[in-house]
Length: 98
Image (tube, rainbow, N blue to C red; front, side, top):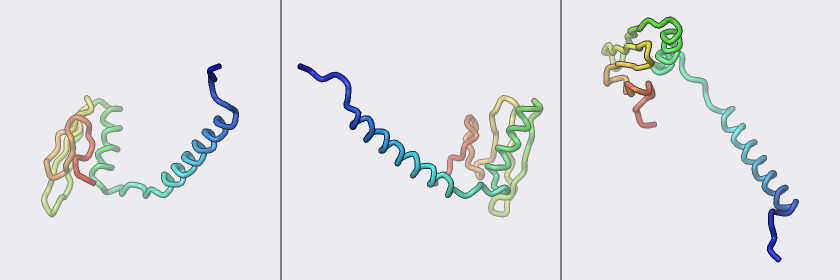
């Protein structure tokens, strides 16, 4: 005779393990620090929302290592930026290693 399915005890153990994983993950997420409002990535993300809403491109200027760096946010979601900002032009994500 072959056994099909699982027992109630196996299901309860699985649910307990998933609950512990979820609680640890929730505590870890709460400890993350909010992003710096002056960080170029934060400013570009906020500007992206406004550009997508208005349909008009925006050019931003940042100071990186005492030099000006420009980033243009386009209405199609693309970003053209100086290499000093380390931004992928297609995704808008940082290419800098963390």
